[in-house]
Length: 110
Image (cartoon, rainbow, N blue to C red; front, side, top):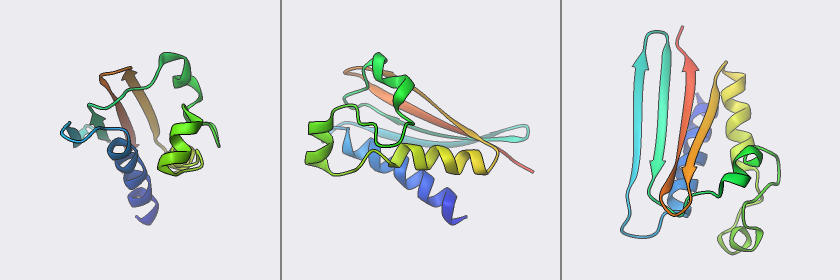
């Protein structure tokens, strides 16, 4: 339970960190058949497409200067992904630069 909370907080904190004031963040939890879907979608800065394949690598930061200013070591997403994997799930991401990002965690329900 604690790990799933940590995973969720990591994803929500990233959404807050990269969404300018006045823009929206949506958190949604759905169940379809034997799967739970947690979606965190923001209307923030988005992620350039060339960075998407590397987001879950340890210490990887899209913009190292910006990340240093806002804190962080590039470990939040890799930790979140590891937690999802430990629970038999996965995390996917879609993003459009300038329009925001959406992270979806899929977990089996037993």
